[in-house]
Image (tube, rainbow, N blue to C red; front, side, top):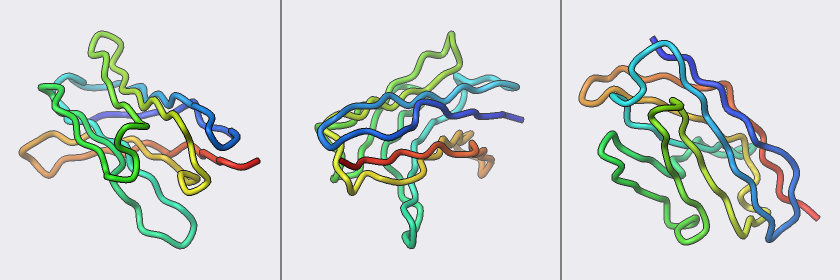
Length: 117
């Protein structure tokens, strides 16, 4: 069992930066692939960035060069550094933990990111 708690969301102007954090508890964090997803109003949830247990990373095209995902296994935390934010980045951001290759996965409660002037 894994509990995930996101933090760091908020209101930021276009071009600004935010760093999201996702703190995990309850299991062996280092064994999980971690991902950040987002869901904007009226849209499907999409994968934004992911980082595997081997620290391989993957990004959706729209955030490449602007967002960076990282993890600190000693703190059981995954981060999403978001720079050069755009209004279209506005969404609820969710943290996901996946125990590959099983189907077991867990979700956080989400944190709102709003990019607006």
